[in-house]
Image 1 (tube, rainbow, N blue to C red):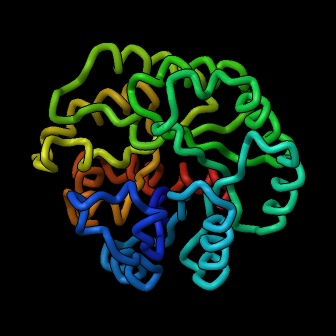
Image 2: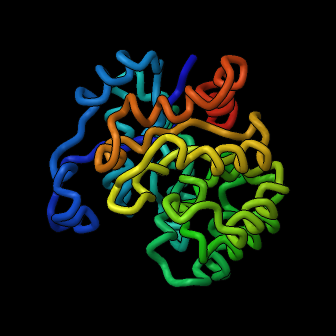
Length: 271
């Protein structure tokens, strides 16, 4: 079974979705399961994991309602306020939904040190009782605090989104590489080979631009802890769904693809 471990749905709202600037006009519209279903079939993808893009329980409910309606949505990574006093109650409530698999917070937009805050750390601690995963969405300057966070929770299942968003067009940065290597030493952490096409200058790229990054991530994590994610529809700013998939399928062998395109995501998210 092939799984897209990272994509989004939204009913576009200019105020709520202000992060989608006028320079990103290609995605200033609704993106629904009907839009994605055909693409998955065309690309021989059996299912997907819908990931939050808004910091609200309203969106978590929205994604879960879609997952209930469409069988190809195999799991949801939603948002719950990890700082909330009633966090245990909220996690208990959402855990009542079979397809609720994990939590994500858009840390990349937070100030440095956000993941060191005691209230955030305690929020992560609460996930263990409910067996929920945590998606780490950060930029390279936040890697050091991600390392400190993962060190604190050796039994918590983490996954790094978008290989921590290095500037692909600038080539492999040694500080990024060193910190990724340290982060990857914790075997409870997986990595999504996703979101790379939009980390290029002016969204211009050649498939060879990703080779050094894929080689490094593969050598660092091994093929048992890597997952394919399209980052659709954000990827459409720089590439089609098929192009994003081909970056991965052209790089790995068929046996490696069975893991990266499906088995690892099924195991990590318990799909």
